[in-house]
Length: 239
Image (cartoon, rainbow, N blue to C red; front, side, top):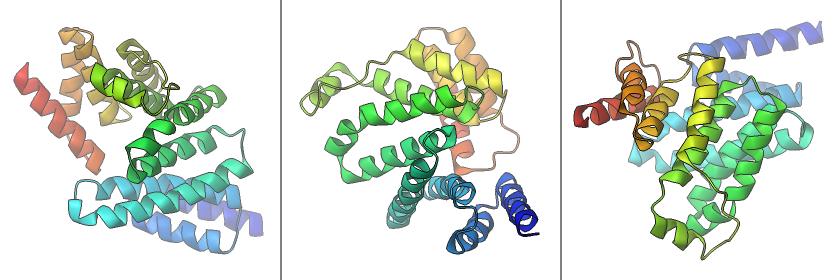
């Protein structure tokens, strides 16, 4: 009976998450975590929903403190998740996410020093589960951001560490394409970054295909969806 109730609770949390009811899913999972009910299954879901809640806070500068609190809470869950299940893809995925956000809050030096660790966990996440599109998206975004840095910023980074990973737009594109192949249309941000990666490689024809997908969403549901739509429209107007 207890196992059935536990599974039912996860199904309810997953359904709430799937309906974009992040706060309701968080409250349910937080109650389960307080009871130490199926700790790993509860924790990785808490990571997922806390990250989603944090993304909704990003567009509002007045909520910066709430955003930081979300990130540090999520980092605690992610660290424990990794301890409990070091061979689970989801553990590495969320640890990388929250480590990146946390080190960003702590300053440029910390962010730079953590780059190779973040990449290692994102890579491990894709190795442990090659079918997880969001992990491939995250890895692609990591490569894209590094590849996009101007040379002087890369030189500045080397003042902190020589351990900066190499990254190219081709690396990023490969990951974004892999994510799309695994789950077509799963994430407007993937469409946006596919378009931007193609533009960086001087392929405007393919870039337009994905930018138009991001721009022409019929029902954006999250802050990230709206960001992807807004950015894609801006880029398309300039082409």
